[in-house]
Length: 266
Image (cartoon, rainbow, N blue to C red; front, side):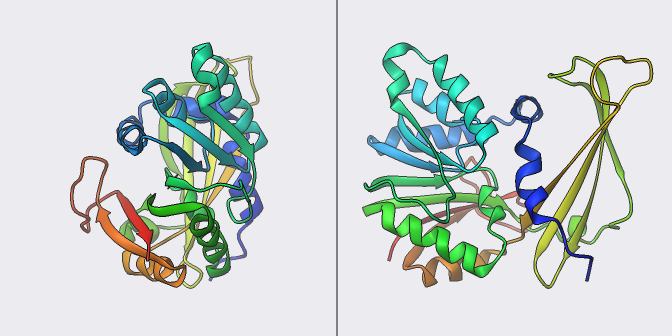
């Protein structure tokens, strides 16, 4: 067992700088295209849990989708609002944003499609957290509707690596500070609690004058296995429709990076 992880830091830290966040994931496009297609196919207003900076939602709205987004982070919602303001005027009302915890909210309506993209479900650290979130999904899901969530497929080799070692990453120009930084990260996995804690360190190049010398933040993830996901859905009155292993429709297998879960009311 590891020392207790700082789950509050791991819930908030990664999202406190949405400019860096969007830069970090600017090349992650397959999930954007896939979720956008699902939103457009729904043909109705959709609900996105953990909408974040509207990385997916804003592009989907440009394609004709109508989305209500919920997120806990004020910083990410401010970035989402900036994105919303760049939409054509006639589309801005097609993206509605709310600050709320996805374990406890009431929008007073139901949706034919509810999503929780890009590993956000992995911020539900306990069985109670999962049950509360899925109760909100059930409350807001219209008869015949679908719930779609994606999480990381457990990578046992990654989860078993040393918690003491820093792994060097790329060198990049920080989008906020306009200075060169080098990225490094380490992680520790608690197999009993199924929690993975990640620490990130950005170190400014010598000679650079702008920005902090070092930037650190954390990210916490609950690790979910496929049969466990199905059991959580069943306990919440939902039924698994399908697992997929990526955002191109491949079946779920041991080498998949993502586990895409599609469910409906039982």
